[in-house]
Image 1 (cartoon, rainbow, N blue to C red):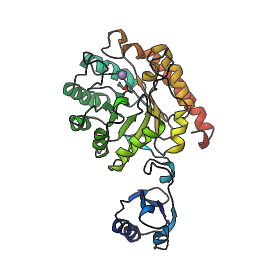
Image 2: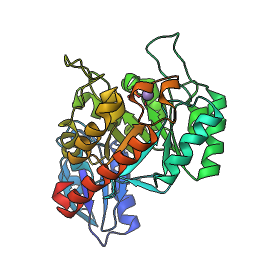
Image 3: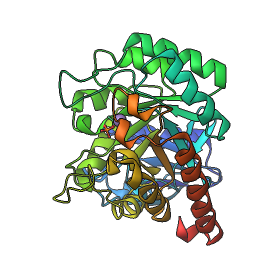
Image 4: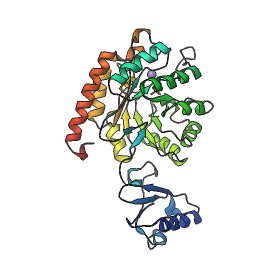
Length: 341
Ligand code: PEP
Ligand code: MN
């Protein structure tokens, strides 16, 4: 249930409600919004009747949450969630962009890409230190050395770092460096990793599994959130279908669908969806037009020499073009009013 407190509710009254929930063995989550406070209590209606809570001081209304995703559900929050990543608001009207190479390959490569990413006005740099690869013989990432380079590049260009955690064992190392911890598509149902991310202080970028339904994806978010971490960003990155021209199929319709069902920000990754450079910009445009709150996109200074995902990396000039087009589409939606986002 969602307990909506009155605007005038005092801290003692909020504590009293929390104490009743606790007495019934229910975990409550206090949610502050600029106008009011609410308490989200997943599965509370199984143990407590609304009329036990409703007469309490400071309580406005008790609303049942019918969705199976209690913490991620749109009806469990007072409005849309904005996740802050090193000063960048993801889920706010302005399009949030993360860009960079698939993986950290060398100091020179990382710094060259970071320089033009920073020049573009984008403030979040993506680059994997640990790479989940289909083949065990493919480039697996530079690991700890890459994390050190990412810290250096953050200092040099004042960029936030988006980098992937692939295992529970190395999670701590990655979260120390990352401003946003990415969980990869093929780890979307790695429940131990999701729970570990749920105990992190850092926001999490949760990619949709290549064969996951919207429901499975939202339950994965619920795993993270139920451990305490409420800063989750969802990312559609293409799913496996029988369409074979592109690497994956960008599921454009899942973007507005996810925004209907949850309060979490939803972004898109046109690079892994398309798998080829010439399809990335149109996919990015489609995602933004469908209401994506942001994009995560791969770009490389020398794509033909990239150690992973070179064919889908945008050249610097393509990247600037994509940004310009995506921002203009977002402006059209912003001007169309809040219903368009
Ligand atoms: C990546 O971002 O480089 C990546 C491996 O993405 P995904 O998990 O979506 O395949
Ligand atoms: Mn990649």
